[in-house]
Length: 118
Length: 113
Image 1 (cartoon, rainbow over the protein chains, first blue to last red):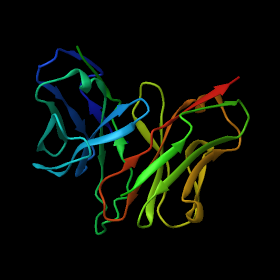
Image 2: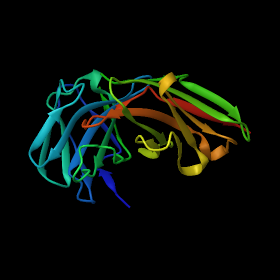
Image 3: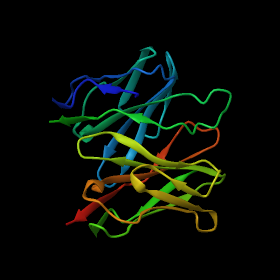
Image 4: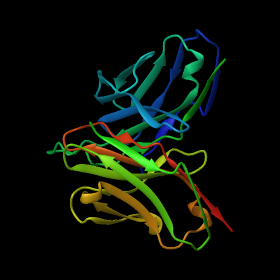
């Protein structure tokens, strides 16, 4: 079974702090994703990475950056946390569809990090 | 651009009753469609997916969904609800060649005893 582990279940940070959210997957997946989940808005993609040191912006990248130095680890960074970044953050990974550009293999999610910025 | 609309942010059914969760999509090209489920305090897990093979797709835990191109719909059903089905359900769409998965707003399913 694929395991995606997010280092913290709950975090409370102050406005202006630099915040690191860590995610590790154990199935050698090439692709990793960070989403935020807000009531009534579903999941929105922040950033994704399709290889080590490679990243692409999702739909709401403003205020965030990411780091992928090793294949198994994908970090989300809030450079200067603000109250509107209070949310549930979900990390996911997916295997590449080798020999195909279909991208229909499923996402495997971690249990989420609930971040509160005060 | 692709988008997904889930009709009803909250659905409540009695145990043993039919479950119907609605999802409509818009896509300029044939889509891939997914249903994910999120149990309390957990991440999302895949229920089922449509990838242009059979239009009726069977998933885990007795759920199934039917792709209807003419109605641009991919509604999720289960003939008989169980208490353990209480969760939030997300419909999602992607297109061939695209990494991004676009999620709907989610539908919270409550099961009444």
